[in-house]
Picture 1: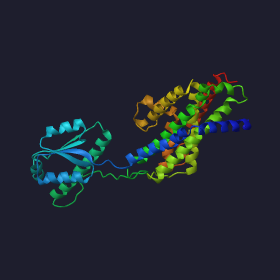
Picture 2 (picture 1 turned 90 degrees about the horizontal axis):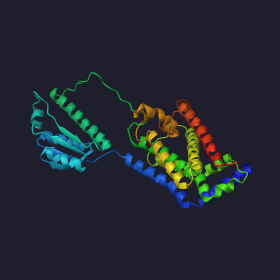
Picture 3 (picture 1 turned 180 degrees about the vertical axis):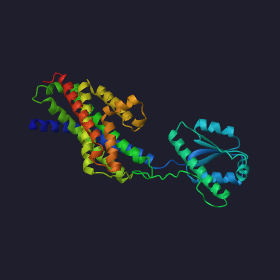
Picture 4 (picture 1 turned 135 degrees about the vertical axis):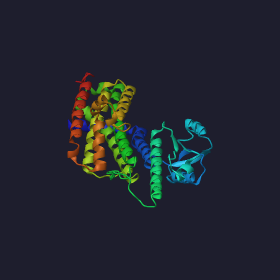
Length: 376
């Protein structure tokens, strides 16, 4: 058995090396994609184009504009005289926000008897990420100015007007960088996508070329063929994974707080689970095109349930119950826990057990689909 398996694996590796362009693309293409995602999310959102309507034109309004400008979140590109003129800039996308200071802003601020001054702030909600950043920055500016004014009106004495004083402590991502979340998510998703798509065309290619029938007259068993088809996908997928992990840590500063041995072992285990899914699709598909379409569909569904785009906890109850069917759902929980939190096996053994059950079921289905091809 081992003699046959060895030569079958060598045959698969030789066949893989004939497609040098595919090997290069599979290894370095995902690396480039992850680097672009990390590069775009590592830096904070700054210089959002903003419309300013300063009808007050007072010392107080200029101080407010200076405070907004000092955050570096906003870039004042357009100064208008009428609030109605700001709407077309928001609608056309030329501006993300509009700051409107009324005529009596300075007077009310100097003499706040009866009513306090109001400042208008319009946001383009079609881009929720930029809008949320702009809103948080604007609220911070207003809160800071309110504190300064309270001290000024209190004769220069600083007093705490809040009854409840929160003490915030952020763990595992102290600077609240988006890249700490997006880069590991992108890395895990690309790892699974590579594996399932490379494995998805393995048996389908043999069937399309007519060589699968030739293999049926040899002493090779279904399990031996599945193992041999697994080796190229494992080599490509894990090589790309190690390269992306190295770039994520060395270039983009993603921390590694857990055990290397645990991370690599579990990543390899879930890689094999996903690989079996690709082989199952390949055993079912009639040709390579059908296999690619099916694996692409599977990758898109896994992307949805991975929690990368939308947290699973925010999904409807029925979708939350469906999510554990997909191995990437469990792997992302484990991957982030080891990488960012440094936890041990006791923290995520239910997810590991679920991945094992999924792997066994998928392996049995793969062998069954191979049997449907009259494999003796």
